[in-house]
Image (cartoon, rainbow, N blue to C red; front, side):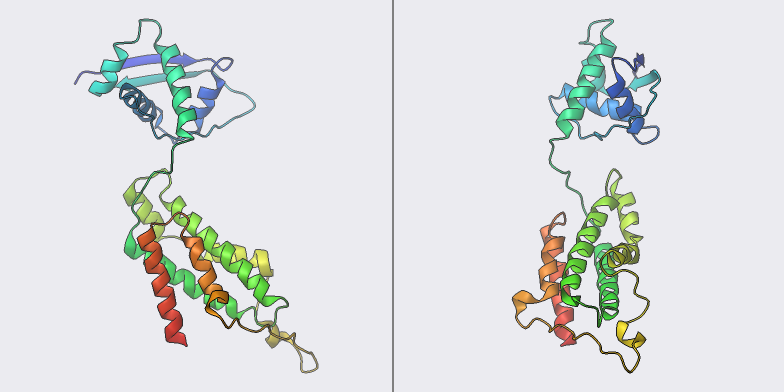
Length: 254
């Protein structure tokens, strides 16, 4: 198979941004990512690439061995004048890093069964945590904040499962998503450490704080209010299924 190998040395004085960008890439992916950029450039497109930088106090020169095998990349390289490979590649890399920041999020498929399983675990743990809050002052205001933050973190965590990985790896991450850890962190943030319900720790002479009334209208229902949180970042069809499942559970409990 025809291939082209280029050796380039990046200068920390004039090309520190490119060096730091390459340092931030996952291990052993520099060649792959640069190839993506060159192929996209040959087609007048912008490569969807990581655009973060890993800055350190001291940046050393970086030597790269780049191997190009695709016809598109090889054809593009033939158009670069001899002696200008490094300057051209650096210019292209910089442009794609900046342009990739403006690209919309890439679409991806979420494993339906794993998502439903994670949601079931999440809702069950949320309900258990709610029981611990009986007797807590300003309980309902805190529960509202707790629900919203917890579901926002859950939605972000689902996104993160598929971030910078292939679909199979993303499904694996979703299957092992630690819903309990997500909820516990938010719960401690809002309520602090609650070992057991407050009412159980009171003696007979104590007066429990009056529990705030449950909302009566559907619009005020806290679980209904948090459905919309999941809509950010999840496919509409998955969101609707989650919503219907939660509503069905609520109806069965009544």
